[in-house]
Length: 610
Image 1 (cartoon, rainbow, N blue to C red):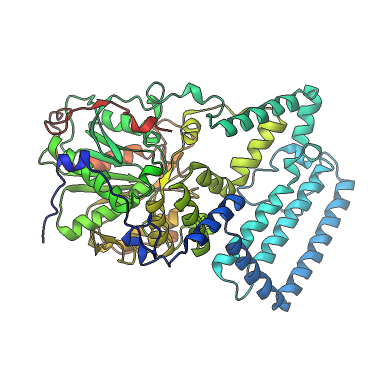
Image 2 (cartoon, rainbow, N blue to C red; image 1 turned 120 degrees about the horizontal axis):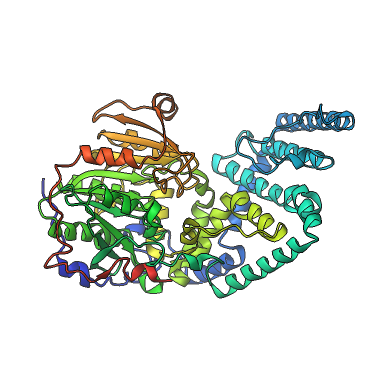
């Protein structure tokens, strides 16, 4: 097998990425690697579709219409389903009438039992005030309506799975608008606060709404974010920028122990987020924790791309990002293999790079760690609602005009997926109750948004989400396909229970894509809060189970029953695993090298770009 030739320092630091050549068949912002999936586009069509995207907030009306026609057509041809829904409506009316009658006779020591229970994770009506008349009848009626529409939009023979999910999602969003908890006259908690405060809560809420509208118009950060300044309050772990490419800065962190493990750790965050989620405040910084555990830590800080970076693609993120960082580390810590770690999209990129390295005989990795990273995209979770051919085509037209996917477009999709947590509960709390949620470091980081280059995002959506090219061995690196089955690097994989971006069952699929040693951890929390889970944080737990190299596949439900539960943070579990795959401690390496001298103090300049 041939060994992959490392990039030279000059090539990594001075590379200029040319714009993709124009083609009559494919928009100039899309690379050759994407053309096999992209149909010819007329420039006039692109301009028209970009205008449509502006009006519809990047939601394809044709995709929604197709889903509606699919559901309505098959529903019209399902008389049995219609009868079932009629019987369900009659049964619900009977239950509600009995509940109303029970309410009339109920006493404080013998309250009426609800006629419908909310879903286990539904906290909207958990407060005791919702059990008082007439709010109990209101919220029970609403929950029954949700139950009926869930039955009406699912289980209809002939409707495609994707269209069923879209229609069910739309129905939930429309019903959420009508929830009694969202309005002053029908929310008992808001009414109590209004009476107690003499309406001052509504005045404070109006002021909060005006502040938010002004901030939205001016692009200023949310109130309270000024207390978490990058480089002063967050991202303060000492270090040096030792490499800068057109796509990233590589930060090497200063050692805090007399000796360190000989194998350095390279962290590859997602470029959909700024890297310092892993270096928040000193008390919850994963990077600071690793340095304190005796590891030499390097982390990539991605550039926030603009129109000038529109032609950068996934291959550029590999070459000017991961492989350039690996070459620098090889010069700074010569002769040592690297513990490579990828988060979210950065983890997917790491898996691609590892497969390419295995193909080419490049053995510079000691291990691979993935945080909430998908490698099989056949069941990517609720994000798939926004990803089909129509949606991607509309996004491509809009990105062709702007050169990038804006942070607002991404934020809007996530808010819809978690409309109660991210939108309705916030609106009720801040605009009706008049209470600002206290800002914390994670919230401030979340507001510090990034963009994504048009070419890269098109490749990502088409090759991974739409075509699942990676798990099927069709994803190309350097013009040749890579296969995850070639990976034999010991691997540590973290998923989170409440992840809406990378559902844990999807992340778990790595088990059947590689036969390498795999230590799989499932931790409490979501996509971000589950990873930022420092030791000592209350109410944290995780399950962990190791499959040896060449071991049999363990399905996710079986894994849940077999994996023992542990209280606390998963960080020590990872540190122990890394130590078991590392050599004996040695003296720390120098900060930088002759070919990679320190350029600036951490956190560098790219992370400050807005």
